[in-house]
Length: 127
Image 1 (cartoon, one colour):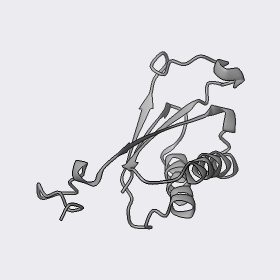
Image 2: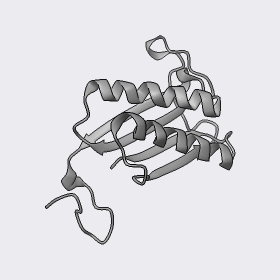
Image 3: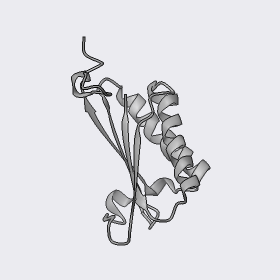
């Protein structure tokens, strides 16, 4: 049950955004056992001066193509699965969208099942 927020610059077209979105989703399906139909994302494009970041923090050389990916999901994945997810997202984005791995920042936020309502004002994941 992940919820994804993708923040990036104005450059990508709608078609490129769809490729980015699908690449991230497929990486989650392949590495952290997310069902194919568990697909909830928000993509926000930002203008000049709205994405602020250090261009060389932790010796990673970032460019104007920086993309931030926030993933909120239910807790329980192992560190190995999380690392596999990071690698798969970076690899897929490079292959499918030409985004440099150095420009992919991923932030996972975990919570528990009672923190989700998928509609109708109901906590569907809580008995």
